[in-house]
Structures are given as structure tokens and as C-alpha cells.
Length: 299
Image (cartoon, rainbow, N blue to C red; front, side):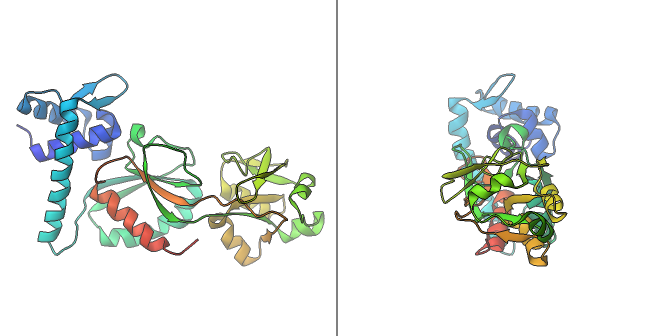
């Protein structure tokens, strides 16, 4: 029989991700080998552990009960290994993380060298994409999401707070004047972010609960905040973007922060989210703990 320990890991990953192919990608195995591991466990136990359809794999009742025990065994084994080897948890393999482009490039990528020094046997795959990915279906271990989270089965841990800021270049303000209230934005060139509901291409919202909305228009709309910053610093218009995107150009004087009669919307925060599990994999735990420690107290 194939290694039962690996078989348990494969089974757990398959159920977490909902498919054999997703588990294969996440674990760096071939789909054939993943299938063999699951089949070997079922043959050993003499029961069917998984329901298989063309779209999704789900555990049988027996499989769910078996997994509940297997999860505890794997977690306890990881902790036992850590206790026996220098009191530090050694994590290996591949950690796949989906992150919005601007936040990933400016805030997460610079942290990877320090994280890798702590966990040299773990490879991090940063998927920079502003699209809202399906973590389970696409085989991601976790994702970082910004804003108020929609209700879902995903587990979320807050990394830091995040707020929108309204900004324009000194050249734009000198030429077009400065807005002082939300209604003034109707007469200005506003560069909309196509993936946002509160700072989008047709209207912008303000106030603690996004209760004040104003229609906007402008010569540019984009699905990436950095592209909007480049256009704004060149004097094309006003942007309404998160602090992590506009903090640097504000500090250098390329952009000026604008304060109106209603405050910007509080985005709610930056969150690490991952599939539900009684205990997430060690590689996910150590990365999230590292990020929480780094961002502690930093808006």
C-alpha cells in the first residue's frame, strides 16, 4: 500500500479544495498519483470515502467522520515534530497565495525574503490578480482580500485596517480648482476603479457607512490602482484609492490629499482568508501569523 500518512494529507487536501485535480496542483503531484492515494485508502478501509462528480468531490458520511479524526492526527503530528526538533515548526512544500496586484507588489512581495529566511523549505507562489478568485475551486491555500467581506464559508483573520483617500496632483488642482464638498466632484475629472463598488466608474460613496453618493465621470477608468496613480500624478484627474496605494505619492508631494464635507469610506480592513478547517495547514498558519505580526498597529 502507498504511504498512509501521505494518503491522509491527499484526502484532506482533496476535500478542502473540492477536487482531485486541485489537490494535485496544490501538493505538486500528478492527478494520477492523487487518485492512487485516495483509492489506496479506500481499498485499505474497505469503504468509499469520497463522492465523485464531474464538478466536485465531497466526502461521504463515513469519509467525513474519518477526516475529522485524520485532521486531528495530522495536526498533532506536526506539533509533535516541532516539539522534537528545536521547538520550531519546519514547514515544507508549496504555499499558494492569491493577492490583489497593488497590495501584493508593494506590501507583501518585500516581506517574502524575511519570511523565506524563517522557512527556507517552503516555496511561496504569489498569484497577483485583482479578480476575486475561488480559493477552493482554483486550488489556492489562502488569499488576501481588502474591504468588507461578503458572507462565505471562508475563515478570515484581519491583518490591518484600510481606508480610502481622495487625491489629486498639485498641477491638476492649480488648473481646475480644489473640491471642498462631495457635490463638487460632479464638476471634476474623476478616475474610476472598475472593480470597486464605492470608488467605481459611475459614482463614488462617502461617509462612515457609504451613505453619501455622488455621480462621477472622467477621461480614464482602470482595473488597477497603480495605473490610476500614474495618471493622477500626471494631472489627469482625481483618484479615490486605498492608503497603501497613495501613501507614497502623498509623502513625496506628487499627490495632495483632499478632505471634503464627508469622510472617505472605511474599507473595513485587509484580511487573510482560507478554506474552513478545524486546523489550517501549518504553512498557512505560519504565513498568516507572520503577516499579522508585521502589520500589527499599522493602518
